[in-house]
Length: 462
Image 1 (cartoon, rainbow, N blue to C red):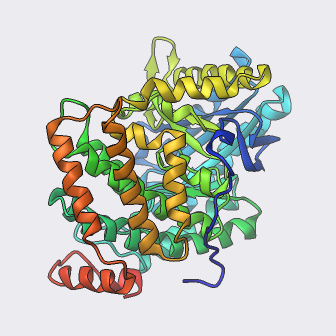
Image 2 (spheres, one colour):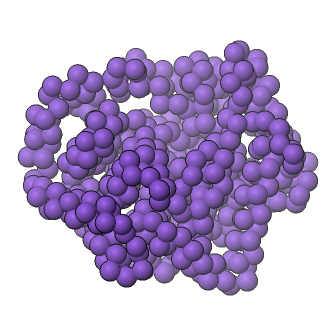
Image 3 (tube, rainbow, N blue to C red):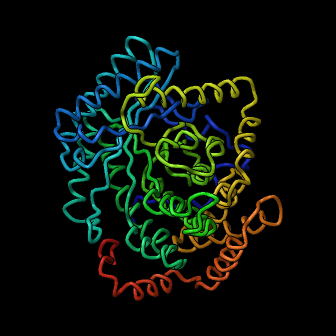
């Protein structure tokens, strides 16, 4: 544990009723006159270049120039006052740090022109790819890590206002554990290994952000909790119990929280569905995705995710033509209309009414949505800060509390199939059988993984 880490031992909000979209306890000011979490919401448009654009640096630069111009033109055309652009790096941009730097510079130049001419408040988030994952095993602290940090340095010094990443720590162990329904392994991979990696990487990202006077924004457990969500699928799927995906999501909260303990300040990244829990604990602004993510994947909480968002995102959409314009224009406009509705609700004094409607519309759709309803998310947050200094206990607490919430809900309006009820009962029994001693839990899992070729303890300081 680094000297600069701060653990969360109490909730930022005194009551879950105080949480609402467009407001955070610690708002951020960044980019061109943009404030996040300071009383209004903004769209965050997320996009990917067409595969052919990755053939050369020149093609990629041209692609991102078009994307940036298209988004800003549409925002101005329809009269929206603010927007965030998120550039999730394709691999070529991170392994060639100068590519990412030039793209960030070109994007920021265009954004400055639009701000100067039209006054649109805007900011640029860059999310370098976590290039530390090889085909055989992760190499979290070797040469790839040095190259990753160089990419962060380059984009931070060439125009990016906010820095994020979807870090991979613990993924190989998680992938092996989730297919075997091994809850101890899931808890270890996300709660211990994931947390240790997030701490490690975000101490460095935060230093880079401070050096270049930009924002260390946040991480997301896309590699693990979202993987569980995707495998679990919808109501017709039986590949993975949704109650197991619930455990993965709950444990992802203390894991992603570690970024803020290591210096990040938000806004948390869009695909971190655990962000409502983190906002309750840390008071930071968050980006969220929901119904707008259908261009990339389905989820079971398309409205609920809006409940406490400060930025409202669409997940990554490939840049291409649609009947209504380019894909980024269409999604940017759709998101911005949602934000206009939320901002009007704030101004009219109806923000909490709208928040409750968003939440209740999906609350009982699935246990994954149920635990992330803001009142239940707050409960999971409380279970985390109760043992905030112990990365194992707080993860275990979160998992147990999420199961308790689903169990209570199943006696009310939350409908569970026989398969889900059986899975939930098994999960509760398994979690309660685990030790309360962090060192014992870690040793047990390290011994269990000693024959796993793709697991490298040295990635996590063991």
